[in-house]
Length: 410
Image 1 (cartoon, one colour):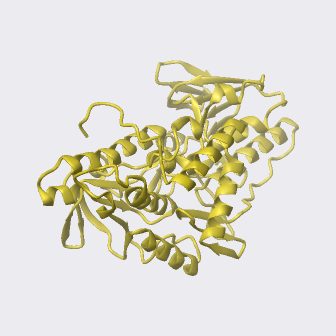
Image 2: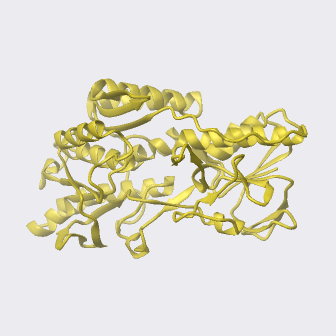
Image 3: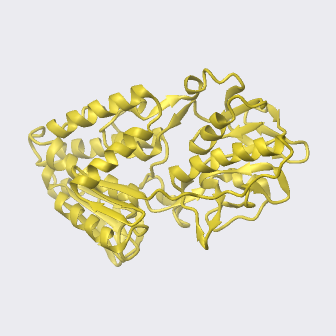
């Protein structure tokens, strides 16, 4: 079996096949598994990269039926049953799982990507961290009041969980973490805006929690602007309606598109590029090929299964169940998603939780969010390190991963 992608879907499928009579080749462009729900913490200097990531070889070191291959899949021959890597190697398969995740979607404006980076990988997180920290440095060295204001103006486009988390944490950094560290600027005067084209932030949550999230953001100092889409973005700022707003730091959290590997399958795809799969998550007409995670378009009870980590984990585990059933000569069962609820953090002691109608906001929701994310981290070391870092940040307001790498240009 060949598994493409070492994220939640691919890794959970791999681990679920431990002890089975299956020889697995796990292929990923990166050598690590990433706990993506905490990626914004790396981008905002709350955690370091190794705190939320672990080498795939280390995670799977005791699973003898797995070979990990560092590489990028660029081709697929369904007739020969082989995938082709960027280095030219071809790897044959009896069964194939593609769980290569998603990338950024700019809704037809890919030219915005250079000036409004998104957050999907550790490389993205480190680049955003650098951009944020350099903005304060540029403001400190600037003599022109208008230019200084532009450097201290931050915008996050997209009011989903990632956008809310980025905006809330950025406001906290400006008002608490950087206090007394500059001489020519007051970081607390930084303007943080969260821009949402829809009528409200966190649209996947009940409206009451969405409103509480907005209130908590505003208490942290974030200006929430909903109902107006961004019209243009460049290195100088962004356009909202007919108004140009100078802002040297714009971050993108507004949309995702499925991995381009979906195009290799020659199967029906939705507007976001997700592959329409059969009930058992196989590709129609090719029962030996499965798709899981953000690349799979799955309908359940008339609604799409959300592109979240729990869904990807469940899909990966289900593919392992389907493979085991096939090997035993039985039909593969249909996938059924179990919704465990929605969580989103806004900032220090602020979060919202919706679990089967049980709704929380504020401090209690924040503790619930903390416990859930620590519990689901990969590896005991990661859990301990994250707990220590969060405890220190809670009492000191400090974020000690504020290191700027590379040349001092942007």
